[in-house]
Image 1 (spheres, helix red, strand yellow):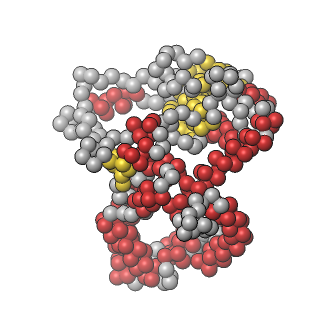
Image 2: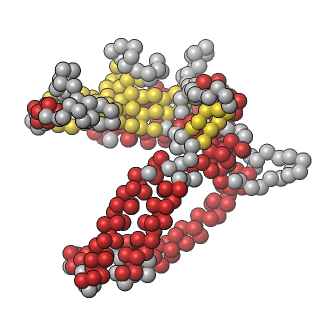
Amino acid sequence: MQFLRDFQRHGIHLAAGERKRLVAISDEMLDVGRQFFAGTGTSGRPTWVSRQEAGRLGTGFACSLEYDHMHERAELDPYDWAAHTLLQQHPEECVRRRIWLSQRQSSNQQIALLEALLKLRHQFARLTGKANWAEVVLEDKMAASPENVMAFLDGLSAENKPLALQEIASLTSLLPSSSSHPHPSIIHPWDRDYYVHLAAAKSSRRRTSTSNNLSSYFSVGSCLEGLSRLFSTLYGISFQVETPEGPDEVWDSSVVKLGVIDEEEGRLGTIYCDLFQREGKPAGAAHYTLRCSRRTDLDHDMLDWDFFHHQPLDQPIIDHIFPDPALSEPLHTPVTTIPGKPGSYQRPIVVFSCSFEPPDPVSRQPSLLAWPDVETLFHEMGHAIH
């Protein structure tokens, strides 16, 4: 039945001429859609920030950008870390507005592709007897119809609107007043991230001043020890703090290297913990993989080797990189065995980054975490262990 329904959705019941037209529309949709989605991550209009504006976030941030000498401006990708930092932390509304608008503007080519894709989807829907593309997409989904989707969204909106209004009210209390507007009440779209960041910082300071007794139990070291005990109890996994093999292994002296040890299988991998904020480091929490885990003894290294040597020397492998047999050699991957399991394995290496207050080197006070910071630490460590 599923196969039959799928054939019907794609016009098996249509006359020969209409089927042919539907196939042509489907092919064109795939092509246009591929072009459009390939450009979605790079379609924002380039934006800029002046050296003076960048200086409002500190010399470290300002010096991390490259400026043209004529206008003293740095061109920015609207989606990179610098643009997001400005949107979240810059005190001037005009700067935040410039960044926000650049993130929501596309090239004429991208707009033309989107309009073409929408027209093709509408043609497909009408040709298959549907009123619109939403009916095509939802036909075999749990929601079943656009009406059900809208009812679901309207229900969510009704439930969450009072909470959203409360949050907006708390943010508007942070708006700067003036003689002409002693009680400002508008949070513009480009102001949201800034005032959310401001409110979070204010709340964090308040919790720090009123909850020192609680935070004193949550030093970074004790939280990592607690995580190690938790994982040991649940999964038989523990952490072992290790000394980097050389100064180039870590990118900052505050980065902690942890070996992840299983009580039966031995070493599982490595986690680098970049936990503390510092000048020039992007704010927020993130996790990413440097090297994945995989089984290696089933690889066919010589096939890669033979493939490389059969490449035409006058054609680039990728971009502007040409094959050079004189300099090439097989890729040697560090591997290990696991007790009780056949084969050899590549151990994973992962990193997670947070923006906690660093320890005080003068008073030797450790980094103490508020409860939301503890939740963040557990959340990111969950990603790393996974």
